[in-house]
Image (cartoon, rainbow, N blue to C red; front, side, top):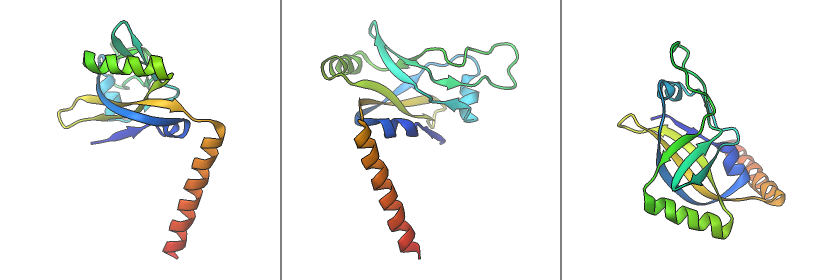
Length: 146
């Protein structure tokens, strides 16, 4: 099972809660995902009229598909049940959080799944602290190898 991670999201946000959702795809998009031809860029999810939509997820067209190539950055529907959507809407409206995709993978049944996180934005000094922690951890690991 290949997992494609959104590393920039972990750098820019604090994750409060993670959910797994199905992803509605068209045509040969699943083949492009299997090849790893996707880019998270600045993708995010929004709740519109009781449904969750994923924006700005770039899935490149499949190179062997000549007839039908869906738009690479179209909005894609996420499959969540109404209870989960209701809980997310409340937290987004009250606490000012956002929905960010963290991972995309294909499960054992061959279905595309997205892990979305209810996230709160980091300040600049929070990002600097994370970088310092990573550098210190890397230095300690390097010292242990020697």
